[in-house]
Amino acid sequence: MTSHGRRRRRTDDSRRRKVILIAGAAVGVAAVAGVVLVSCSGSGGGGEPAATASAASSAGGSGKSGGSADGGGSGKSGGSSTTTAAAPAKYAKLPSPCKAVTAGTVAGLVPKARHSAGTPTSGGDPDTRGTCSWTGNGKDGYQYRWLSVSLQRFADDPRLGSAEDQARKRYTEQLQELSAVKGFTASPLTGFGDQANQVTGTQTLAKITSQNDTLLARTGNVVVLVEYNGAGLEGKKNPSAGAVQTGAQQAAKDALAAVAAANSNS
Image (cartoon, rainbow, N blue to C red; front, top):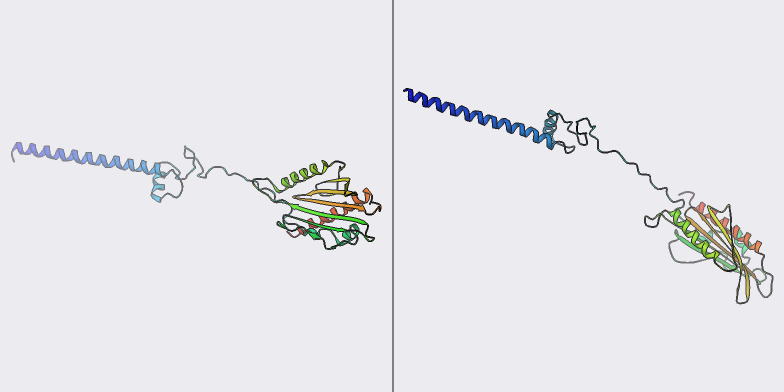
């Protein structure tokens, strides 16, 4: 081989070595880039493949989400929050209003009632509200008596508030309405649920003046309204204010006890 040929061969060999070195360098850069890419993509959250976790580990990361920037995090997501559940309503149902007052109480307050079992007011959900009334003219036919018991239960509502708050609001509204009647006086009571007032007065209708008493009480999320009126007909003497007040109180005690008993197994 001539000297010119040897020089040409050495030149070709040198060029091939440069190409190999450049290619090798490119592969090395790609490998490093691959490790960096895998390491970065592996920091986004749990559930990454093993290769990702391994690459992240080799890069010095924990491979778990939520860790601190220096790799010292525990890998758990943000702090836990505690939500306090609202207390359930005290009462989930109502008794039948016609059974809320005992037969003995009815017989004592409305002698010779036309319907001793009471006359219910129909309509509505019986677990939400109900009314029952008794009326009669007494043993001699001249002692008019009228007794009515109304029950209203409230349930929790995200728009209206808690059951008890709604009952408290309704109690306040009714008391304001009753107290606004001319000639009637409201007096607070204790021992009748959470709140209670008794509104007393007289009312004349068709030339007959009756002694009227309304007892309004709230127990938890239930509002109880007892109305008791009495009048003497054909010139007969009216019942005293004290007797009517005592009668309304007895009926209210029965009704409050009936509400509690209806929910004793809830």
